Amino acid sequence: MTETGLQRFSDRVVVVTGGANGIGRACCTRFASEGASIVVADVDAVGGNETVAMVEALGASATFVRLDASSRLDNDEVASAAIEKFGRLDHLVTAAGISHANYVSGDAENEMKWMADRLAYAEKPHLEVFDYDVEEFRKVIDVNLVGTFLAVQACGARMVDAGNGGSIVTIASIAAKHPDAGPIAYTASKSAVWMLTKKLGRMLASANIRVNSIGPGFIETNMTSMLDELPADRMEQLLTNIPMAKRGEAGDIAATAAFLCSADAKYFTGEILHPAGGYFTS
Image (cartoon, rainbow, N blue to C red; front, side, top):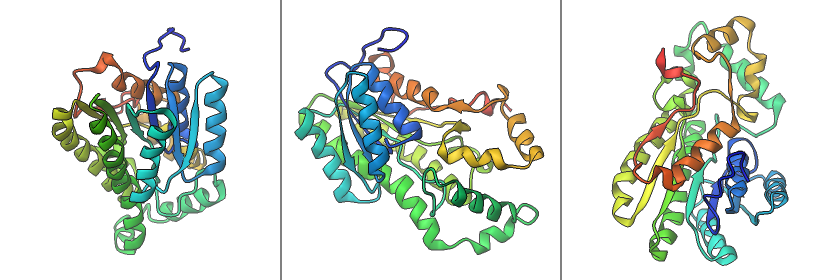
């Protein structure tokens, strides 16, 4: 149970893609703490099963399904698992995502190399445009954008079949609105996720399915851990753009997702909320 004692998701089933760590894991445990059963979907089986254990420790039920977010078949199997295991599917949170084509959650050495490569373009950023490998660009789009759409297709279809409506939360980013908040393919993919969310919000409203997005700011997760290795002046510059002068926590995003899926947000659809420490006030 949450600190507020809320149990808004008793007898509800939530699918969370990217549930093996970070924001996805925080969403799994938050919804579970409010009574939901959880389908943890991720390419990382070890982390995914760790999340299942965390959910079960809270007294809730969970199951893990391996998911390549860019696979139509995998997304369909995730949605089917929710129905087969729990008998229903009420909510979807699409937290699966990558910052770059070679991203592996928790691989610090790989992330440090990637960050060093990017910093090499700091003085002449135009060169990165011309050096960027198109296949790497496509992979980021496939996971972040196409993966979001496939998850909505698979899970949304089950919601429509059941006739009970539902709610979907996509995870975008402040990069959906600000080009300096991420690398090239990432910002393109997240801005597209935001536009997709608005379109889906309009299209699925007639089926009583609400679709909203969250655009997190700089949150402390595996994906942002390499920020700690930035030169002091670069980190200071980053924090200067955040009025609250600190990074957020994965739980901040999970709390926002829980709100958007709850009856408290019953008149929200096609919207985006930014837990970002005031980033867009500057």
